[in-house]
Length: 415
Image (cartoon, rainbow, N blue to C red):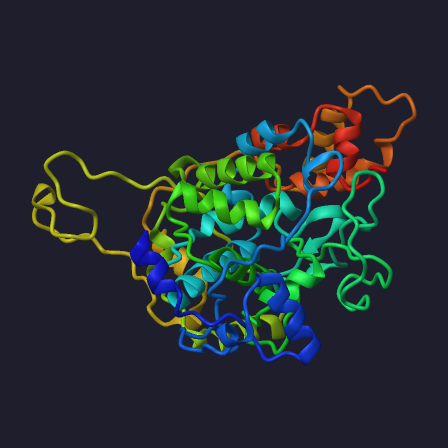
């Protein structure tokens, strides 16, 4: 650990040149002096930003009343973990998490943050950019925008007076957490980064927000390949022990083969460099272009006495099976890589709620079990259907809460 700490001291503290007042505020958050801020010997991120050498202590998000995190109402943690599946992560979010992990680990080789940890935070904070009726577009942007409750010190909230003039959270009196990773505006100012080369640092953009989360977690000297490092970094992100425990449980679920859309580790065939941003910019310029999908797969295992797939196999007459081609050009994008990797791998037949009508019928059947004397769930069925469309019935049943108040909160309709 001493070697890790020594190697990480060389990172720059500030991310981007800021106005004097903003810089002073940022430095007060990370608790370092201006001499430290002048260091610029770390590998830059895509927009020239650098990873802070000192751990950012100000939280990225804050606990909210009645929930472990915005998209996890109290009492639903077990069902959220049970329903964890990368097949339920929108492709734009999945590629953002994986790309964010690769970029931050290239910029800071001592951090080792797994993409599954970024994904777990995205799940609990916003259901991968879909919280409160939002839709995560193929351009990676949540619409109409994710805004947390006003942090005015009432109803169990923390009091944080406005720090951004309402530019990010549309509130000029108090702050609100913003975007898929639910950053408090003041903390966003210290980690914001243009991850996709579109010229903006947008907390509602899951590309920018995922990499910013990596910047936050990798600030300081923790090694995020270890449980101790993960716990410390996530606790800084949100000062709640229940939050830390849930995030790490979901991370572990995503890391298991049974929960992966593709075999763990195969997504890493492409190493992303700053030049990848032109490809992402193209994706954002054509947001209506259908996104490629990744079907959950089960990797085939070689029979005893045979070699690994893709190598010469004496057991099949000496023939050499065709090995899936993984593109090495970073401009091809993550989803292209995933599709190439799964070529030739056994694809299971999965019974899913393939249409909105099927999803709506399923939600009706689930809601019928919930006492609802005032008919509050009548207007919630369409939102439920949008949430579970494409899931298997088992996964859908596991994510739909089993009480009236929990369902309303899950769908962003609670008080």
